[in-house]
Length: 172
Image 1 (cartoon, helix red, strand yellow):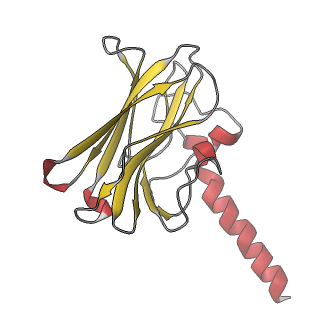
Image 2 (cartoon, one colour):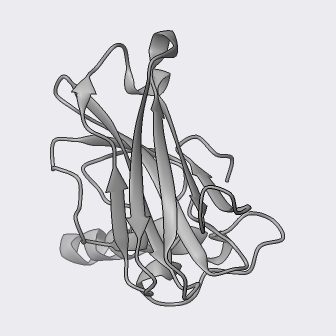
Image 3 (cartoon, helix red, strand yellow):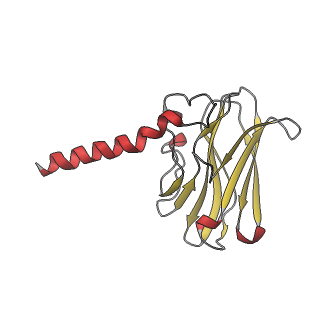
């Protein structure tokens, strides 16, 4: 009897965790496609779990705490979710993405730390609909993870219009 109650509780918990999938993008954006990228993640701190966008691919270390914004998608075919990761005394930013535009893109990932310090990473985003990761170098933490913010911006080139902006503290 106790095993049935525990099993039922696990099913209810799993359903509750997966329910944000229907609202993976911002208002007015097309829904995220079904499959691995379709399970949207809600903003918040999640110890050691990768966002649903890459479920199990290049997951953060088990001891890391991830503060992630929601998955967002552009009408052009770029999807992303951006997180601030903290493990021990180190903090860094990571964005999980998929690029279905058919064009190679550039991404700039910025980690904003307390006191106005920033760290940037420039990443090439291949022209294929495969999940990818871009991250900044880890730096010694200068406060709590709540004091950090990360923003990823995706564009075709430095002069082209912005295709997508994803943040670690974006509203759902």
